[in-house]
Image (cartoon, rainbow, N blue to C red; front, side, top):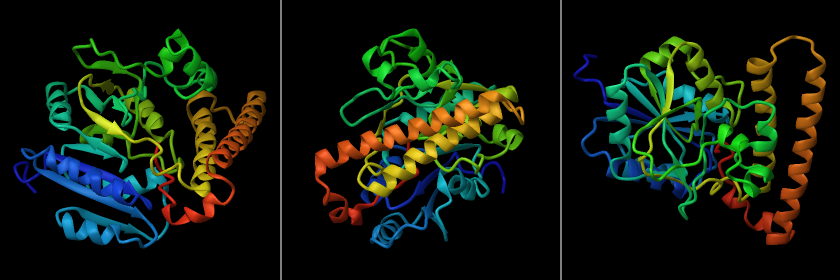
Length: 320
């Protein structure tokens, strides 16, 4: 394949029982990238038959559908397509996102202008316009357990300096892209040369933390990580994760297992250290606390019989 034949951008979306969110995501990409030569992969992580994939094949024949016999998680699913990607830039895009007009064009143009950038992210907003704070000026550390973007302290004191380090707020007055340590894998554009140097995503992360890990390895290899300021990407975070009890448990447990893996790989890699026991205990306790409180809230909102009625809507447990 010559350079002239190569796509401008490879888009990769991992799907697991995501239904109409997936179709809306794909439609938005093609609607808003008419001037680009695209290669689009959808990796299906052994979803239940619900007609979505048939609609995908009928409405988007240009999309390459890769079928996995089992749920590989986000990183494992992405890697199936990363092995086949041909474009100079690769976009990881969650199926519960919708890119706006010119969003991807702006990201591509900025990467073309800066050969030292390996990863570029976008600000993500909820359907109601709320900033999701999905880029960080500091890699996650012990304080992130208290000042991460979804913690109580960050919600009560959103402008404190610790939360600002781990999850930057979107600044409407910003005029230029800005350097960060990590960006969310929900919308992450990667330079092919950077991936070739540092390798693909770590499949040891089933759900979440794989994006911070990849950015960490990129920075170690000398590549910069940036976030654009003006790309319009809506992320209906939890739209497919919050509907089912099984997804709630899978996501919560996977998050904390990923946190421990990240800690052992990038914060304290020593084989034996007293801190390991403390971290294990703290993460286990937080897992139990979150599962308990979230289950109570779920029951209070929906009643104890709701999960059985809604099981057919069991969503994608591989989203952020």
